[in-house]
Length: 583
Image 1 (cartoon, rainbow, N blue to C red):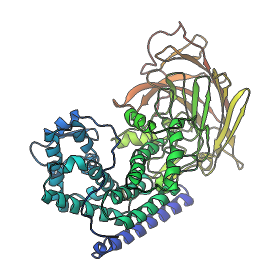
Image 2: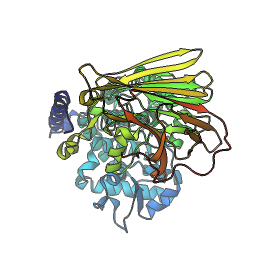
Image 3: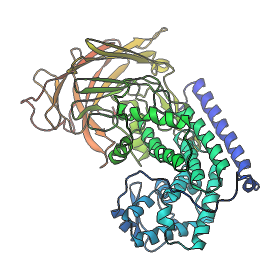
Image 4: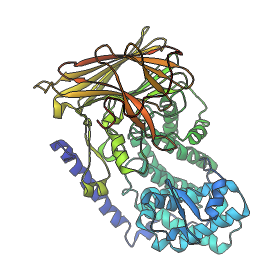
């Protein structure tokens, strides 16, 4: 079963009970007398429209006008129908539609026709509000819609008549009231924080809501204190969440100033801590490392957010609160996951990639994790498993277990229900270079083995040395257990075997590294790169396979060798002998 231990089962039951209790409170809060608890007068006008700093594509406005809605990897042609009458589309498509984040594309087109189209679509939604599907009122979708309507209000309301203006405000107020009452029902983590941001931004934008501003600010500060760690990471351990949070917090900070208010110290401090962490997770090519749910990097959004970073200081190297290490020298960068599982309630996107690492050279990534598969549940499960990461796997099993029971997954999400109970790390820096030694016990309960990984990057960044150990836990273990140490390669990297049995890696700009292992001959096998804007791509992986009894310690080395004339042809071909991603 997904929960193999009594501890994991107890945690899952406690989480389910907490979810049920919160939903009971929400049901009471959303009762017939909720309307009497609105903190202040009913809003009569919008006084500011905070900026939406996400980039927009004006060419998409023409598609929307023509009834073509391309969301979540799917294109739906409405054929003259209202898009809100569509029921045959996927849930992900429906959530984007009802979230209205696409309004920014219409605003980017900035024409009378697009303004009329935007107003007509909003009026259409208001007319069918009572018949909207339940997912339209999920906290995250509702928060996106509130933010979109407020930030795009100049587009929606310009040239609008008084009747539409009043219908718009009444609907916005209803949604804001619902969002306030559904706050506890929001999924913990980013959805709940987004809900708090939406209420605060709406309160600042509407006239006469001083009391709501105070309440919303207090609630937002609580969420920021709970979710943003001391080093600036997010409690979910997903690097991409930081970008989403900052994209919403930066305009909110400006909204406080526009209303003549000072943003709270908690909000300012959270922004100041998160900005350097964006740089922490970036490789030399600007992409984020693939840890715990991070997929392809939205380069335009990242560039926009980083433009607000006035300090632009060197990122922290030891992010121990977030559970990551950064080793950087001589143009070589190594990012390593040395943390444990996130809290159960925030683990729906967490991966079993403990002690995995990624490495980039001067301009390109060489070693990566496979990333995230969007929109495909089977590939998403594969991507979360340990073999999809550049780390050690025992018996082709993951170092953590995921909730697999269909009924519970539908209710609670695909949680990570059991994993390492202890993950430790030690960092040492000296004239010779940087050393990180970390271990986790994710394989201890099942196989009696502890994985320890030592990584050393020398002072000039030309040599990365690793040592993977399987330590037998007290009480005995089956030393016949097989292991595989994987090093997934970026699809742009070409890999070829040298005459001496090593693996030569070549990037598009000619930077070359040689992978060697004295005890086990490295094998080139197929892999797959999932976090690409163009979909899944073939790639290769280096695999070291052995037995815990015969080779409990495996040393390996990556050495920068410059441009090699021996490199000819492409990367590893399909069908080569050796273990693949799926074992």
